[in-house]
Image (cartoon, rainbow, N blue to C red):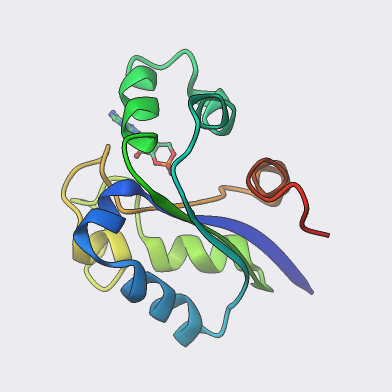
Amino acid sequence: MSERTLVLVKPDGVRRGVIGEVISRIERKGLKIVALDLRTLPRETAEAHYEEHAEKPFFGELVEFITGGPLVAMVVEGPRAVEAFRALAGATDPVSATPGTIRGDFALEIGENIVHGSDSTYSAEREIKLFFPDLG
Ligand code: CMP
């Protein structure tokens, strides 16, 4: 059964010029991109997206970072898409992420880890509604 996940190439990924690399890995895996947009996030959207981290000490930094430049938002579809993309992304901490994964290959800092992928089908549904409210 097919499912959807929200993928972001975060502002550090856009600055580093790895949009194409991320898209290419998604496509090579066999996942399908069903929506894609380059945009700078308004603060309200960033705060809503990261609401589960609102009490964390790094919340302010996280919102500043994610709103600090354009990002690429995508809806990615396929069998077990949430888990499939998280496997492509690698561990949240890029130093522990296995080489061969996106974070393992392109990042060093936990706050600047190139991509975001929804962590569950429940989060995916919420995040897709937030980023692409018109998507059926
Ligand atoms: P993401 O998957 O987008 O979801 C939450 C983000 O919080 C995570 O990626 C990290 O980039 C970020 N994050 C987690 N821990 C820290 C931390 N200790 N300092 C800064 N950012 C963090």
